[in-house]
Image 1 (cartoon, rainbow, N blue to C red):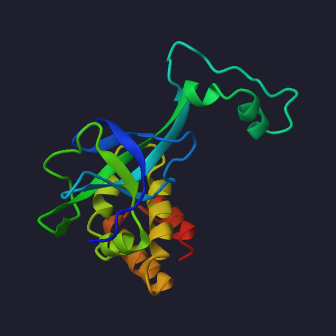
Image 2: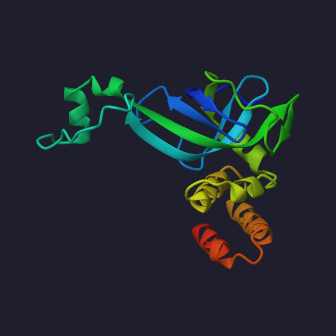
Length: 196
């Protein structure tokens, strides 16, 4: 099993198809399209599809504060309380899970538990997960905003973990062409984003 990596967030909401994670540090989310995992010995895997930094109090609206500040960092340096007034969260679409060492690339029987730690997967785990593209149909069917951008971002990021990134992208393009047969309005922009 890959060595344990630093946890970046904690599950604060979970359903059978996605989970929401609150970051431990403001603005330090896993990036769009990243593969993340949550849980202990039988982790679930998700692809980040939405990132937001919001006020922790839904009734309190953020106001502009930087009219005389030299930079955004200066605003936070002179107002350290801001770090406690906002939270950065990201939502991840469930795409697989590990059970008894076996990696499955489809929905888990149960979502992660609230308060489970969340980790961004390292290159070795991303390569292992993306060695089979059977999870792509889950991403393509998901009712998420900018879903095709999320898919392109995931595939571009995953290609960097493979020995031959270009070959991985070609195989991904072929799989997308099969899954999106007759949907050229979706396929062509995806292939363009992957430079195929």
